[in-house]
Length: 394
Image (cartoon, rainbow, N blue to C red; front, side, top):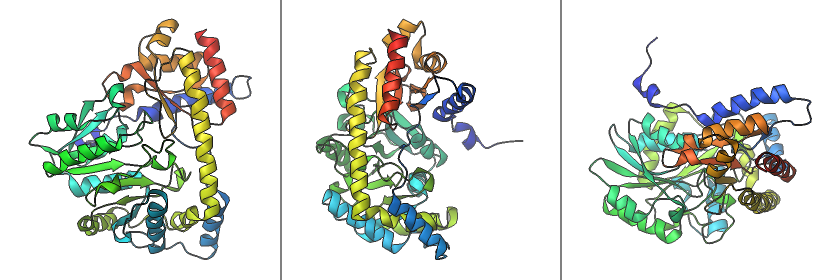
């Protein structure tokens, strides 16, 4: 069977490959005193709160399960618009909001709407692997630029200006970022956007972890910079609705009919039940629960990062959002007699029954030195993980 060259350009999602290996070992460890601890997948251990679950059940019982408009339920778009005003003090008109089948669908739609064959999109290295694959699937090319700890693992305006070429279409950023949990400083983002505007390009920013910001310095939406910003968001992270596959995008008004046409053909619409359920995300009781959970995620970060540092797993930049720790495992790997984060991750799985994600998924710039820990797990699980690391690393 002959497959497309497009498919061949998409690398394996190593996060999931590691997860499969960890699940296989977990089955072997079931019932033992040392079961597998999973700190590899970026999925909240919380599920949708009661009001959201109840809204889904009501929608099913009421028969509210047929197709919605491709842009999403008007009521949900209105709730999202209200959230931007209340949470960030930014006015986002309903007409610019498109509800999608997860942030993944939003990124796919954005790339298909904006990128032609041969276009290049600048991205930081490290960054979330699927983002560059969305560019590739649209026949574009992701150009990864080294992002260091001094730059908070984010791009700078100077880098963007220096890297801009004849084929450059724009930038694809993430703030807060996966895998680092770090955000772009607002003034630097403003400068980056100015560079992009000067070149007539696009600023596309993944803000799916924005609700899980812990520092008011960084917890601001890029949409405040202007109506030409394209922002991707999701109900998966802050709103704890991962498997519901629901997200949204905010686009310039002229882009709405283009995205609508693509969405009609590719997806028809996002899950109707999930949309009705998500209306309840914005109820005061739900927001209060989400804020309680955000505080819990921050408490986990505040425990886990110093514990890693004490074990010689250096975290060069304190995450200001999300639920990740991007840790330099070079010294720890040497103590275990292995080289690189891939072998280190396998060694942790084998000897400590601890699943983490090696850096190779996230780019090529020094990623062999880093592993990503997910702190989207209960505090007792994180404490047990630290105890096992302490036993293993001494």
